[in-house]
Image (cartoon, rainbow, N blue to C red):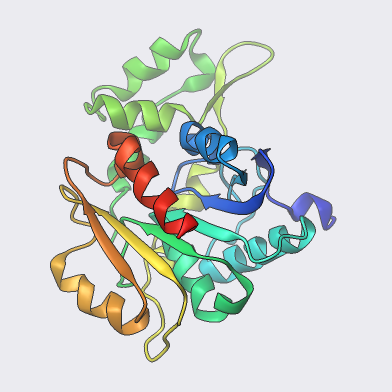
Length: 260
């Protein structure tokens, strides 16, 4: 595979200070398009990359933080970004933390949404089980695929999130955009904690959903130990997808932080 094909696919909006947004596990850059348009209109050049094995980016059997860090740094070098701000949600937030341990002098500010430095267990197995019950190639409409998912994913917002990974085939029927088998095998790789004994002077903001269990009160001491400059805010009325559930508040807090 040539070097060019190893660069993340990305949607780039606006002009100004570079802002790279890293999406969560099983997501894609487009998940952030609404807020990205607002930041682009406000003077940022916003990058919405798809991580490897997600969206329109390349597939690879390896999926862990070492290769994701290489991908991020290759993307920044390819686009010649100078001290870009980095925003990351969930998996993207953990990737941002790993980057902040080594690259704070080469970045602007960091924003981490609803993820802590600690290890996480397998939280997505119910989604993998649901997807294995589908036969999208035999479906004529998206509604038929959703009907196959519904008994296994009764939560409408999770079904909609999963179905963003569906694409229509030219000859009829549908297929998944992402390699579910590779991602399922990689859950332990991307659930691991940050290395012990390292810290960073990165200028970093943590946002957590008040109704989420991803960042607990018990996590705050560890966050402060690794990132002494960290600011931490809770978003009321929001769960793990806080940027979708409380977009106005998230937009305002992040914008004020980046512009300070």
